[in-house]
Length: 100
Image (cartoon, rainbow, N blue to C red; front, side):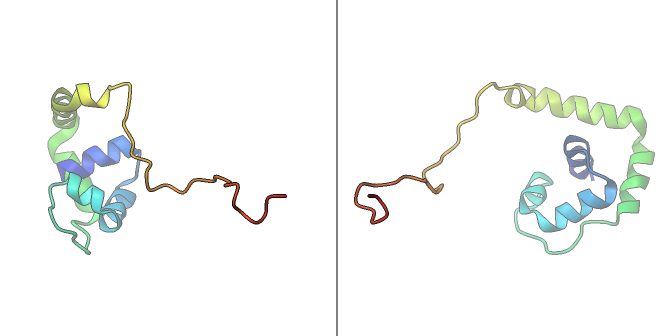
């Protein structure tokens, strides 16, 4: 539930959307602690509302502050390394037949 709340806040999604994205996106599931893909939904969107009401605004702010404290430096890095070796390149070679 905590992972879903963090994803909801970070991605600016509704309760219904975050639960649906959890079902479709294995990265969301991994973020929430699942090691294997789960084809079903983790909960109903109304359960997320009830959980948020139980912990309250102070509880949610505490969870978010703890997450930032744990991963804040990594989230604020100015550069990102991306491997582009598999991306398609639009390069015209001199041996291509469409060159005149």
